[in-house]
Length: 372
Image (cartoon, rainbow, N blue to C red; front, top):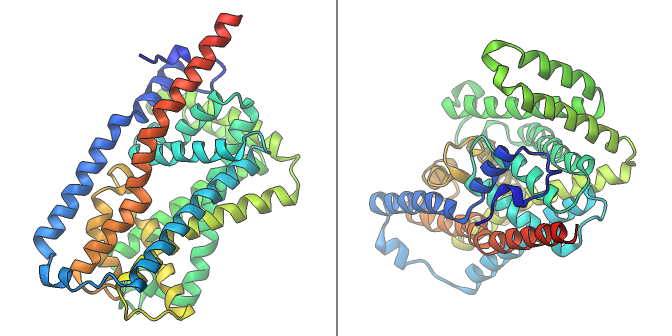
């Protein structure tokens, strides 16, 4: 059995936190999201599935071409994330190692909407790869800023082009958009504030952020979070010192890789909808508006209470895209294939890669201890 003490003591996480991380990425965690996904698809098939419509789906060369295109985009997305990791690590990892680590990162995000979170897993994983503490903090914390920057900068531009239609179909005024619109604004505001805090901490005044975190968690009700808050402040200081020495090219390459990866997430679904909805216009503006809707949908479902949005996304899918995919049967087929490619594929890959990665890291640690 693999124990936390088998891992590097220089890890940024305490022994208890290492235990939480190991639990969060164990392969058995795939059971819950898979069951939720199956339950959601089963419910949709029971309520909305039309056998005649399904039988009428033509698996033509057009369908196969666009499904294949979605797979290529999926691979491109993964490589873009790997490129970002290689840029932020300044070449400390090989391309193969970057690709492997992104699989682990994506797996942890897919199964852990918990207090452990993807960032804690990233700290833990990178620490086991003999990466300096400052560089580990830089990669994890700057990734948060880059992801937030992509959404905070792109969504207002999309709104200028498409207005409220980018959030829900057939809505002409913002005040008529209802609960989803308010939820979208809440999610966007949260991302903006969250990203701004980390940006300020990394590029302007990390010492001040550390003081604020220490002061806020000094209140009795939040006192138990103070050690983690102080640790986060220390990590920001380390990361800030590292980022000060980077040139413009470093930041540009990191952001371009981030924008490419996120764009591919949504373009993948563009391709799947084109594959099955043969009447879908292929002109730039139609596809661009669909892309805007998909990005808005992601912002709303980003705060799903289920692991990776399993079950939640499948049920909400048609409501967001009813003007593009009017058939409930087609919506179920498209959303199921989309989730198989972009979500369940990472569960499967993680189930294969993570046990081997843990064994490799543990064996290296044990061999080093024997040599010492």
